[in-house]
Image 1: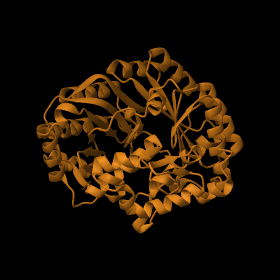
Image 2: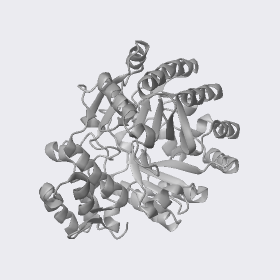
Image 3: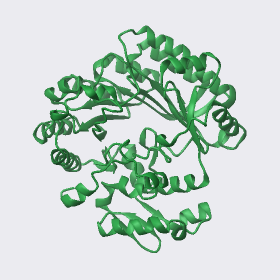
Image 4: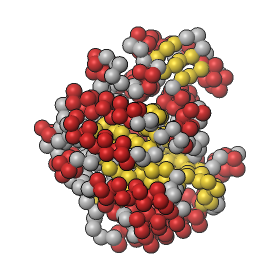
Length: 460
């Protein structure tokens, strides 16, 4: 990272998509609704995918006991645990609505619980949720079952419950260990608590433990973040997700409680990013891509080495591309050449499901051009290279003619040292791998057309 010229960092310190999908979710339209999603499910059931391709399932649990000021997730703050029980009733109905069309018992190779705070649910609530999932789907042998965990909501005993329920991967939301930063974002959790939980999780035998960090938070400084990084190196989780804080108070109301004057300046934020990259690489982590790091023996790093890395709505994944069923308020799904998103408010979600309707309120049916560009963007984001021939054979196009304008733009990135172009394809350089979103953005037809990027987080 230290070899990247400061001017190059400044030039690419811009907003841009994370490309957990293409087209990105901001392109979804309300013209796509429940009937379209039901048709996509029926087509899957009737086609070969139902027999050969396993599903991925995402369940969104929106509840949190307290508000984190930086949060941009869809969440509901409440101290009433009974709301979780009522939510499970609605989830049960939504699962039935899906499997009535899709068919019960389809194999699931990847299950992820996100939020909000999934561990807001009681142990009995989590047991019931897993029973519901197993009654509607079949968890395949060796399925990856992950859950996001707020360290303030669990102890060693609860972690054992999660393991007994079948979860084999954990992601702890840490963000920063500095007490002043924690107070500034209203998320106080002693470092010792996190260390004890990670040690307990290791003793139980979870396959992989991830921690989330955020740089650019209020009251963070390069000096304070260096202390957090030292603690992370000592903790040595299997995976690390390092996110840049995106301050968008006009879109996310909780962020209005953050004092803009307390946010680190751009130079300090870039210094923290450089510190993190240097620390993680020195500690032996593999830079999987973008903001993901993993120890060399972790499945994510192995997939990177073997060229099996994929990307979905949860980020980088070892799982091959597969259809995704999104369950719960605001959940996003992907079936065939379609994307769908559920109602974003709990009242609307409950109303639709209780009326016997799939709660899909927006989505997108991909055009052929979307699918071609998705293939290109995902190859660059996951493999860091693209052979023209692979796209030409798959989509029956002349790559250099189809993407003539994009190749002109890539020539500028080549001059900056981010990519190498030759007669066979595109290769992202070691420098470019840190800025791979900028490379992918070249092929984003929608983004190139309107240039309205303020809705996205910053690349760095």
